Amino acid sequence: MSCLDATFTLTPRSPFYAGVNQWSLLWCFGADFYASYPTDFSSLYSADRLYFDTYTAGDPNIDYAQWINRRRVPFLGFNADLSALGTAKQLALIFGFEVAYSGRVLVYTDAGLISDQTLTATDSQFLLEIELPSQSFTVYFIHAGGNWFFKGLSGYVV
Amino acid sequence: MPIIRITKAQIDKANKAREAALLKDPEFRAFDERQQLRRQAALNQKAQIEEANKARMSTPPNDPRSRPCDERKRQRETVATDMEQDS
Image (cartoon, rainbow over the protein chains, first blue to last red):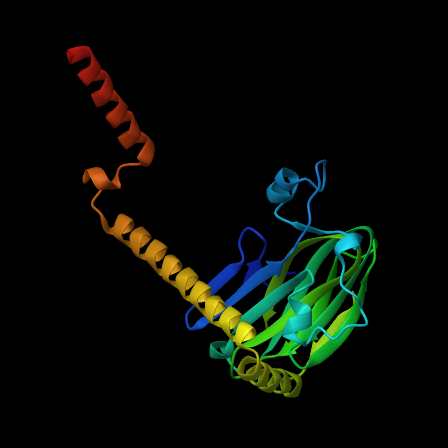
């Protein structure tokens, strides 16, 4: 059996990918840290992950498609232009996480909510299947509850 | 594993909404412009690193610039020690 190599992997310490006429990047507004392991900054940096705490979570009843609402809450942004790879293809984007107690992530675009995702301790990732468009695109992951760690995004163009 | 699907039609709609929001909100537009600058800086940085690596690979092995950093550092330290002893 052979495994498919990721086209790119974006993590907090490596948030940018560039190939020939293609790129993707990750950014974050407002992750949390505390004074002790595993949520202290040094441990998070060493493990190359971000922590989101329930006390800073956004309100799931607010529309985060609007910038004015989105900029006030912790979220991760993913932006990419992979059209050079062909618009007949799909991007399988894996969102890697680890849950401390529980977690909730709202997947948004600028047009509205795509999915309300519960993160459970028995899972470590969820998958977005994205039809590649002919221009750049952006997806937002809004922290909407729970205590969880973000580990990274891996993209496979298939 | 949960699966979320995003279609081309949804992305087209999102990009149109984004364009409208950028026109409407100067703060969002300013943020987006800064993001584009950051992306360009990251692309430039990557190109510079690739260029430097290419130059390093094409430097002849007997050229001092192709010696490993540790060796050059050791040489600098030796020179510094020699100078101290001379003085």
